[in-house]
Image 1 (cartoon, each protein chain N blue to C red):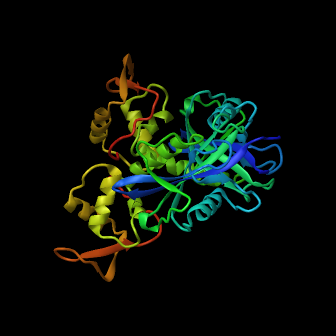
Image 2: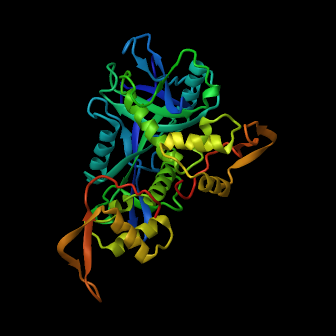
Length: 215
Length: 215
């Protein structure tokens, strides 16, 4: 069986800025779509990458310097029409980072709502990632990965509200978060405030916590 | 960029039989893994298939005769170790069918719990599909696709119970299903029963209904 198929990985890197989800894009400097904005991505290197996730981490590291974001496979886009060079596969990933850890460099950040036309089918990839994050945030600890390592519960609630696009009741939010037991207090460290200092918290473990009920 | 990557599609075809989820497998008649059980799948034909989903439908049709099951992309398994022939990509799909519509032919049905060792990493693909179906059934109309076109509410409740592995309260299940409004009555057709006849129902539309709360 001789196949003539291009195999790539693309990453939808999302962060919160100015209260809104933003996606990282860069301007292409070669054909196809020379000069157009595109997601960071490229060919899988079968002589170098162990797996597709390794390709995604290599590309992120090379293009943003970020070594260990929250990274998850999104969906695979595979057809004969998405790339003028021929039949092509993009194994798409999405990554979440705190805005503070993103020194943009070669990349631009654009709000996910009202994006310009991107190269290839990359608008579809962004839409799929945003939908995934909005759905999954409602029943998991996903939103924490858009915050710095240490955060207050008020910051966490605001992050959930920005992603979900709706206000949450403070006391039921705190009851829910406390019952789920995925955060630990950062000892001896509080955020100075106008009224009283706020406690810092961090994720207990690296892996995602799935809630049994929606927020 | 010269890549040496095999691009395949595999399908985890699930059905309910004897109260349990079963998966369709077939014995391979060529290397690698000659003689071992594997999922239906094969190379993407870049000269014939428009997209990966089209490849999955072609393989299902060729190997099971099923033309229009519920079919959804599952996950992509892509690394240098899963196939002895070299770096390989499997875009995995899962499909749900009613047991009645499956004339097995070249395929065997095995219970998903306690599977033998399958070829390649196909045990991982089955595990991922079973987890997806169990999770997604709790907040969607997914379970309906394991039933024939027309079914009673008792049959639907039993199907949810078999997938979720837990008993559901009859009156709250019926209240929930009725409030979601994704079923329509099949007029003038009832199931004869020992006590009183049971109404048949069918899905209102082809697309999946997502619930706002867990069952």
